Length: 471
Image 1 (cartoon, rainbow, N blue to C red):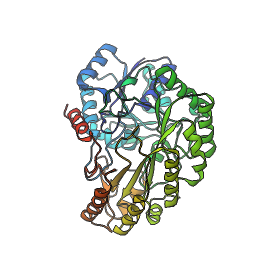
Image 2: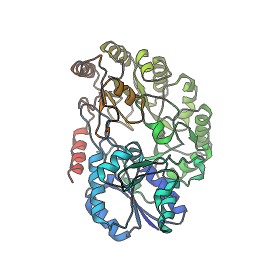
Image 3: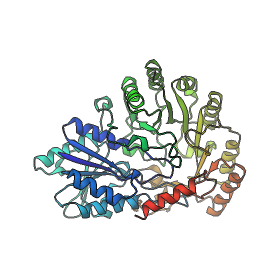
């Protein structure tokens, strides 16, 4: 069958993100004998023109549309990424014949599946890992069977308006999946700095799925499950070698929610990169952890140049409130090791969560001021610290339960339109003032929700972003 996969993301403010999940899906469907086209609308300046052309030229039997991020998770200034994706989906539904199935999926859809189906007056979608369930969907279509009978990975609204949600279909052995197909992507278009058209490009890779951590605000456990499934280090190295030597992409970001969950997996993966002499620069989402500090020289040797680290807070009280099983010293010591090794850091901080007070904010930010940085510019340019104000309330999280118990939101409230939690122990105006105060003396602390200390070129890129929204 001819399958058109569309990445509906329009987000370019931070980086242009190669659609890895869609590339995984395309690779698997190709391995099953289907014909596949992949359209990434992040790169489009006229989505109606590009969508119309690919549909008329390719004449798909089925269209899959991915919704990645719903919003920017920033407060009070928030970018609601869902709105432009919604416009795209509605346009496609008007464009194609009713008999052509349109299947929604992606991480953002998995979180808000019922809300999005009802908002779009749509009837079916895929949740969780999409490879196997999407292939089963196509088999049902080929055999004129009802896809709603698939046992896992499907959600739908029936003719009576009732929502049905099957358990997600998890790929247990990730090595069984073919390497994501990048020949369907415009690989040279994914710029590390979207404002620098002649600058370096980047690619991405996933080494595991699942997260066992219980951070109160995070939806990863719901999207990917709490059971961690690892790719083998050899399989990871094989893909990295392909990216670097076949596609010429030398900068790679590992998109795992947390890269350093397993000591031996990190060690063996780095060793495979070194043994195979893969010359690349790589970045990663890394949780501060003293146990892994002695591995950081090996990571550096294998090409690590950038750690994006969610330190969240340097207040012991707030770390406990967020269900973080570590102390502020973990972040401080990890940061010092990065400086020693000349590894660039990007630190994420959250203020305003459950139990937050002006005192805990001051403790955290005072300690943050003692942390230095390696002044690199490969990945994030001017920013070393991003401060998020408040916590975006996602369904299926502990924070949702806390917010309902405290009356911040109503029980079962629709959270598709962003809702944020601010500790009732602090006034918003005081929260904004104390954060701005620290920002004034620390110009490399970005506060996107307040539009404060944004890096050079951010305003121009935001204008491009909004122009895409207005299409």
